[in-house]
Length: 348
Image 1 (cartoon, rainbow, N blue to C red):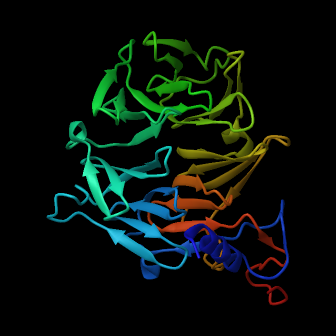
Image 2 (cartoon, rainbow, N blue to C red):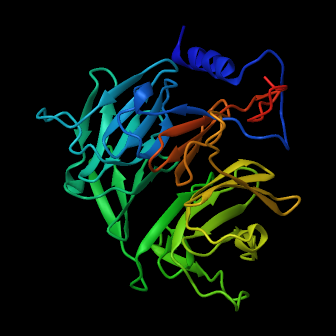
């Protein structure tokens, strides 16, 4: 049985029992994976699924490969073909499904044939916080506030600096291979790779009550020509990439919470998952409302921690919620018909 099929069956078993529905208004259920389950460390930083179906989980003390049953750990050692640091800062896969690993001491390409790692020389002793691949399988890296393009074929790289002197803090690549960059001043820029120029979009020119904030995350919509732009100490804005217009979601006002945004995920065309330092927020686009998901010590299937460090949706639409101190949570796309409510003996 290959890993994809095996993982799907594990997903079904986790979801229990025999009848499932998509539940819109019931409690979200999570399966926890922590040190006692084989995870190398509970401080989880990143998650991705490779071309073979394995789930890779990065922590502050080791890299983990999960096959649906158990974990295999990868750590720094004296071997030149191992990782250079146990602190995993980012994970991504190229167009072939091969795993690449960002660490506090550089970037590494994983070789599944002999389970070794190739170090990318120009990243030595550099903290790799964000990197992605375009449709031509070129590697783009956010490094020291600059954007770097790396050609894997000839091992050449080129650095693009911010024309206004600001640090780049986040970027994304859309399906049309457009590169959008966010900076520390709060501006979003469309990068022209041929002309090496940028077109800047000010997402505060209609929001007089807000001051520009550092952009923490840019997430491209898979259903429309929109970008979700998350500001570190502010809120989420939606930029229409065709018209240049933007919309404030005002999630802090709706939820009546003040929080630090760490990550954002578009679950589907109508639902955003937002990871914060105060729990998981679920925002519904049609109703413009927000639900806060928090840990519940009386419920073993609730969220394991309140500080959400990363979010990832796998190919079976399962969602992995990484926490800073409490391991990783898995939410199945299948919601049980009978939902367990803590303290209610009539529910199973």
